[in-house]
Image (tube, rainbow, N blue to C red; front, side, top):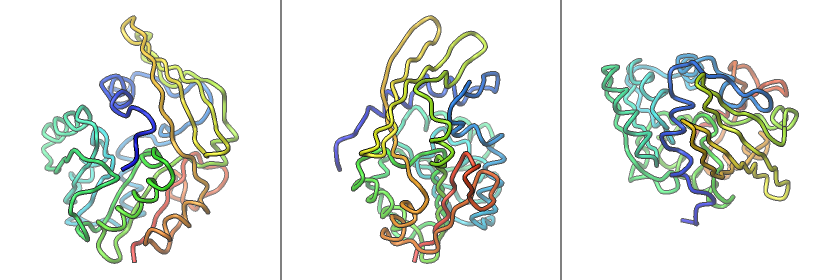
Length: 263
């Protein structure tokens, strides 16, 4: 595995859950790309995933980079046999607690998406949601796609949710208040887009309970044709693109959902 391009442990921690997984009394970004807030709720995401992946009760599903388990727990409540994998112990603790509260059974595993366990051909479906792909150098990102294909059964389907590049660039701003809470806590981001690498680099300032913390992270941006070709090279076929309303992708969509079938 290659060296990490940023400190994921510092990024995906209790502060992240405070702003993005707390009761809904905060606010969406004041300006700039809408990102994951294009979806109204986790149940709406589950409806879209269910439709585009043709899910049925009893199917085995891997939620790759499952975060705090919001989608995985709902899919489990609808009868799927769900495994959630994430690198963050903090997120997985929250996911397990929420699963217990909901009375659902999800197999949560701490791991690295660059090197998945010995799950070759295990899953009917795979979900990778809310821009949970593109955090490594390009050869390693391609390895992640190959790992996705490896753990799916022949004919299995993958759903990946990312920024829709044309809309993202049209709403690009050098900085923004990304999230706020009613008590005055906020996330403030400064942005840099590197056209040579296709990476969106962010310097984030976290203001919480009167304390200030700074961190950096980045993600790779993809247009649909490029990612389609990457998926095909990794072992997928029949690659399609949709927006956050599950309709065919257009320049007006905030999100790009890629559906690909493994050979």
